[in-house]
Amino acid sequence: MSNAAEAAAPVSPLLDSREVASYLKVSESTLSRWRSAESGPPFIKLGGIARYRLEAIDEWLQNLEPHHGPPN
Image (cartoon, rainbow, N blue to C red; front, side, top):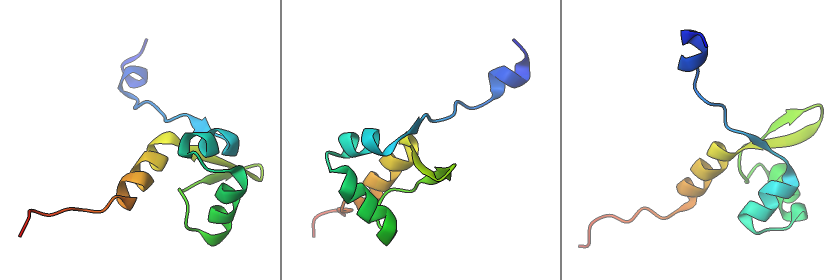
């Protein structure tokens, strides 16, 4: 194996809407609404079909969590 291939960062697998809906425990129609409203996890379109990167979904979820500072 070449050094270039070894140095390449692993690519997050692309998930389809069914897989993401299951992962997030929401319906596919909810996921579709979120896409239309641009309020859900980031996605890319491949041939008109939405695909999601797992790392992008996890980052989106993390950004939804409230940030708690030290107690006053």
